[in-house]
Structures are given as structure tokens and as C-alpha cells.
Amino acid sequence: MMIDFNEELKNFKPCLNVEQAEEAIYSNDLKDFTDIVKETVKDVMANQPKEK
Image (cartoon, rainbow, N blue to C red; front, side, top):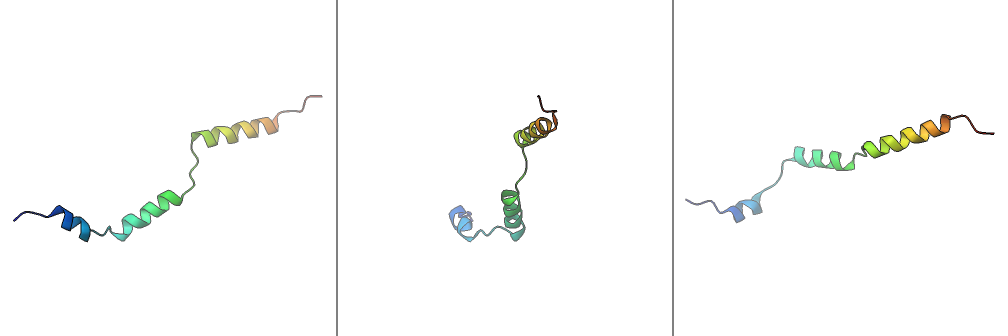
């Protein structure tokens, strides 16, 4: 007996855990390295003494 992959794909339903994980990953606003560098530079510039 041969497996009909097209038929199997039609019947495929991902488990709920995968869908929940995917939603959490894509909706999470993670900082990347550039965001951290920008924030650090902004903080350093804000804390420097003002020139007269």
C-alpha cells in the first residue's frame, strides 16, 4: 500500500501548541542588537555634561 501524500496533507492539522508558539514568537517584540546599541548611545548622550 502506497501513501498518498497529497491526501495526507489535506488532512493535516497542526497541533494547537505549535500554533500558540508561533503566535507568541511572532507577536513578541524582542530587542535586537541594533535596538540595544541605539538605546545605549541615547543614554550616554543624555548623561554627558552640556557644553557651554
